[in-house]
Image 1 (tube, rainbow over the protein chains, first blue to last red):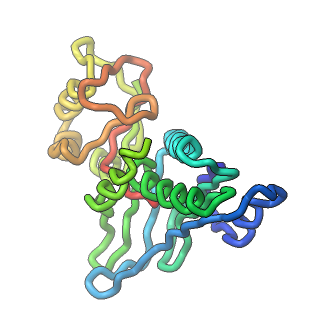
Image 2: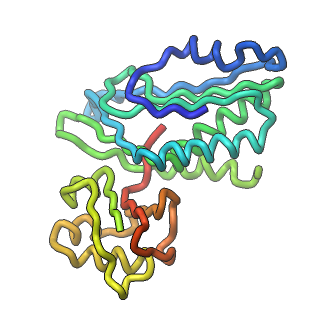
Length: 151
Length: 83
């Protein structure tokens, strides 16, 4: 399931719901992304997430379908927020449920790596020097490439 | 053609979207970017470094040789930074 929303989410409720009633599920894996403030010269007082409505949902659905193709998942969930967020706020939740932990953990890792390079979101940070757009990181692309051979 | 701009491309061009009639001699993404660059100083500045400009046609990432035609939804944006 895919959700793109301005509102916060309740991690416990979402994880409970993911596997509720499905007794084949032996494990639920999750990743929660938070707004980070590294302090010092890189102090971030807030960030604003912009996205491409329509394409965002399309790309997230494709990424989720790919994870379900690669691993035997009973359920999967991606929630990604947009709008203005402050340090400590939740940005993203990725969760996967599977009969076995290996599939749940690997699929969760795969989803967050792919999401970072393929989902059309952009972050702009509020800093003491003013607003600045976050630049894409080569490490994120490398992390995504790690999964390329597995398909 | 509907054009959409995101992140700093939107800020530099000064608008989020516009509808434009595609010139007859523009057939692909490279041609579109070249034509847009000539539409004024804001476009020229926003599209000065094309190595940091990504393009989606009808909500799929495409390369510079991908065809474009009137009726397409074409989005220009920097490399994505979600997650």
